Length: 239
Image (cartoon, rainbow, N blue to C red; front, top):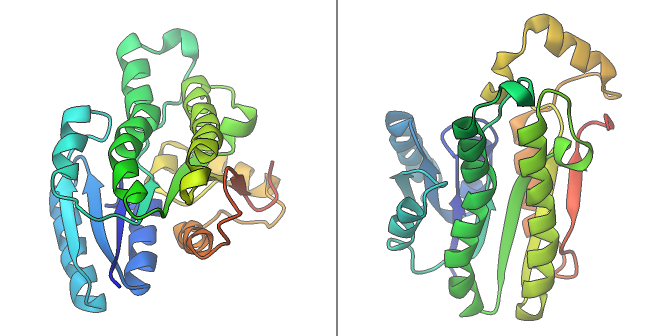
């Protein structure tokens, strides 16, 4: 039977790698992003041609319920939801604007509520489903200069654990992946020297690859139904 997955923030980085991994496994995909329309449409076409799957791109803001609702008007079958869309903010909390705070929280945590709210009924009708939320090690321990981001990812972790308990009787598993330093555009704000200093702190002596996060997502999709409510750290032994 055909399998369907929705991946938010799929035009680059971890989301893009997840899309390739799931397309390879035969999933039909719904992919979203907010800005990179040309890149997302081209990537969707490439995946469709390469793997023979259906791949539907959607341009919209996952932190806005009207956009998410418009997306789900196109979806009538869903097995997997990957909440990957996210933004960061690096700087002193006292210098962060209220607008930046609310925008970060909308993208990083409100979006999980919106997508899950609309995906759950589709999964309940089948008495099965998987929800995987992409989180961060800063949601586990917090980071100076990234207070808002840490708070949002801490909320992602609690959201994951609570929703897993709510949906477990319906055979829907909810887990999260707390990523460490992954080679994505989100980290381009740091200098080469900063990234080198980070690398030296990581026991495996390198920065993580988006493909590694994607592989962990695939493995979670194949994991036993008894594995739910977990926040799995992927950080090379760093934290």
